[in-house]
Length: 86
Image (cartoon, rainbow, N blue to C red; front, top):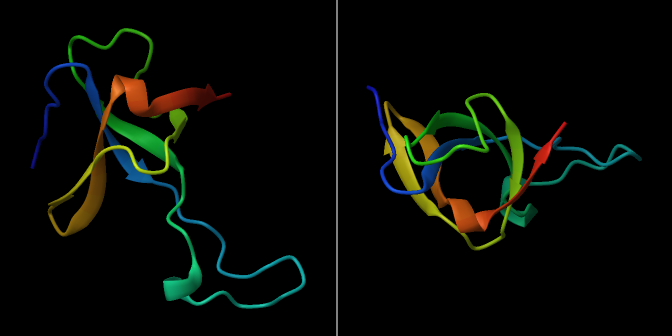
C-alpha cells in the first residue's frame, strides 16, 4: 500500500532499539520507551529539507501512529522533527 503524506508531514518507521544493555541485562518490551529515531519512508510534496531514507530524531509526543500492511508507522508534522542524523 502506498501512502502519500499531505501538508508538511512525513511518514516514519521507528528504528528498533537494542533489547539489552551494555552489561547484558535484557530489557522487557513493556519497560522500554519508544525510540525517538526513525527512517523517513514517505515525504509530502511540501517538504523540501527532508527526503526518503533520512534518519531523523523527533519529539517524544509528536505524530500520529498508523498501521499499513500490518506494520506500524508514525505520521509526523515537520515541526515535530528535531533534526537529521548524518
